[in-house]
Amino acid sequence: IIASRYAGRITWLRQFLGHISAETRECVSRLMGIACSELSSSETSALISDLCSHLKGTELR
Image (cartoon, rainbow, N blue to C red; front, side, top):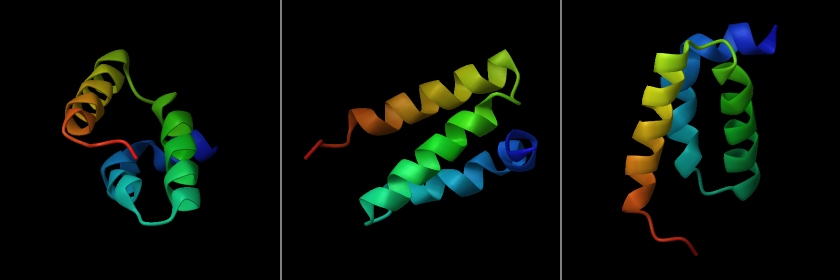
């Protein structure tokens, strides 16, 4: 139920990956992982590519 409810809200969820709270980022990343189970292979691949390209310019602390 959770996966189907949030599969269409991936773009909305993505904005919270940059949240100041580490707990929020962790929860959102878990929820996105669950939601991805409802996406097609091509949609999941596109999302992963997009997230990887976004992270390339991000410095880990």
